Image 1 (spheres, rainbow, N blue to C red):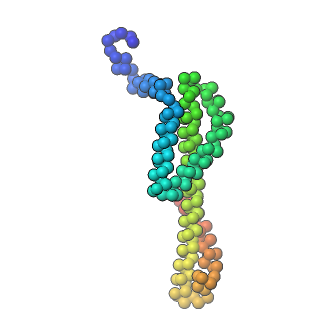
Image 2 (cartoon, rainbow, N blue to C red):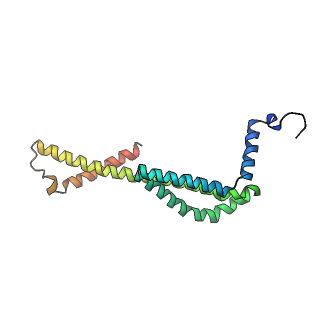
Image 3 (cartoon, rainbow, N blue to C red):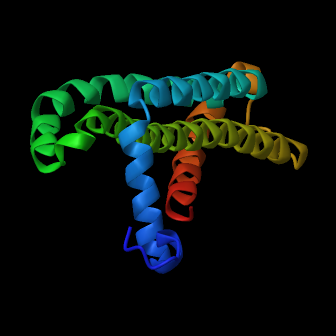
Length: 174
């Protein structure tokens, strides 16, 4: 545009070039179509995850539920404030980007909850296995005062102690 015979893009820095192209893309693209495409990718991702591992699919489902719960107050209280701060030409991106941020936060929360659930479940299963193995070991060594697993609740009671220790170690050493 300065008519010096050189392309303008060759005379600007990489940062300015990226900003220029980003502005063009954001101004010309339809955010609803982009959101629909991302949602389709997310849906496909959910389907693949469900096939691969149901626990993973439950976590994603939990994240979507958390995101839906968080979305209403963010839409009501945060979105208007952000739209005031964002230039008018980019207003259409605010709900879409906020949706992405909310889903990311919800995914982090869901993974944290799933970590707690997995740690507790494995600690309980491991605690019961440990208590039953100890009971069998003591019976093999002649401890006649230890009853068979089917006749007592001792293995379950002892398993709670092992489960608590297992959960503590999983949680503190992660």
